[in-house]
Every structure is written in structure tokens, then in C-alpha cells.
Length: 197
Image 1: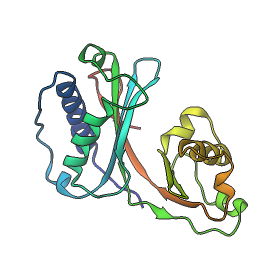
Image 2 (image 1 turned 45 degrees about the vertical axis):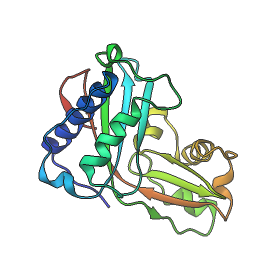
Image 3 (image 1 turned 60 degrees about the horizontal axis):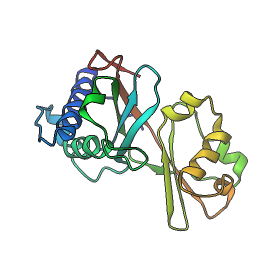
Image 4 (image 1 turned 135 degrees about the horizontal axis):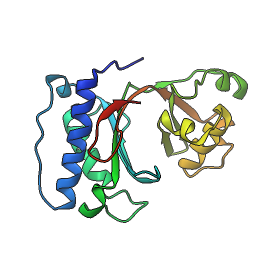
């Protein structure tokens, strides 16, 4: 299930995401040359965080591989500037923000017979999760539980709440849980070196 992306490609993705976002904050359009592999359909998320606090400033993406990576990356970076949880990002803020790109594998439904079996199938730090229940859907990236120190059960509780559901909805037999992996590339400082996370 692993994506396996070269650091050079991850670096290009992060630099492109920043370029697209900064152009959006100036109401401009931007182009960024991306490697040939970015024509393949992939899911991707762009995360913008304040530096050095790490507080979230925006995070938007495509869970499913419905667009070529280059297009999904551009749209996600632009949309992350207008994450509805926050005021729109201003260009003056971008120099104090870190950009991070997560390239996703195709989500797969987890097959399980009990909540305990589900917990045993989740590896914190490796798996991102999606819950779908009665028309609601929520997603959390693989890095989120690590950042907050959650175990698998807390991860599932917060996933349920992300979808606007009760924290124990993940235990409902009608809830569908999918997992995916992600390769994460991030700036170490604003406009700084890009590393694999």
C-alpha cells in the first residue's frame, strides 16, 4: 500500500504547493514545472501550519485518486488558503507558515467483526483513516494521531467527531472504516529545506 515517492519529487510537490498558495493570496495564477509522474491520478492533501507553533492554518485535499496529482495538488493548495475553519490566508502570513504535502494510496475498506478486531488492524503513524456513516464522512491523515499522542481508539473517536458524529460511532456495525497510507513531505522552516516526515 505504500506510495514510494522520491525525495526530489516530494520536494517539488511542496515547493509547488507553496507557489500555488502564495499566488492565490495575491490573486494571481502560478505555474510550477512538475515531474512526469505527477500526471498519474493520486489523492493528495496540502497542510499549512504556523511556524514554529505547528498550529493548523489550513488543510484540504482529495482522498481519492480522481485527478492527476499535479491538478489535485494545485487545487488543494489553493483551497487550503480558504479552509472554512479559518480566515483566508494572507500573503503576509506565508513567510511564517510551513507547507506540507501528503500523497495518498487508494483507500481500502477495513474488514472486521468487532471493535476490538478493528483496533488491532490499525497502526498509528502508518494508517490514515476515513469513516463513512449515514451520509457523513470524515478523514484524518496518518500524521495526526502522532502529533496528538493518540492511540488507535482515540484516533477512531476523533475520526468520528471529524465527521460530525458521536465519538463512539466507529463502533457501530453500519460505520464503514477505510485506511490509506501517505508519504509526507514538509518544509523544516518557512521556505526552507524539504524533508520526508
